[in-house]
Image (cartoon, rainbow, N blue to C red):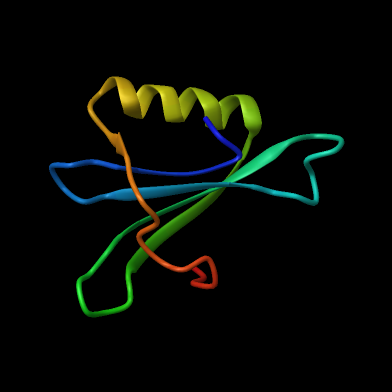
Length: 82
């Protein structure tokens, strides 16, 4: 899993954005995982944000790939908050 990445379920368009928490990276690396769904022509439907240890985020990324999710291009702007 890269420090920043996007992954999407091709069946439902459910999308997760993984991005490093830069403030914690030096001493206790953590990753924010935002979940949502892009809505064409509208703001995305953002549902949740979790703050995970880097190791847990990597396991989640790998499991999503294993069950059929695919990496994708960014689905919403980095400035969109949950």
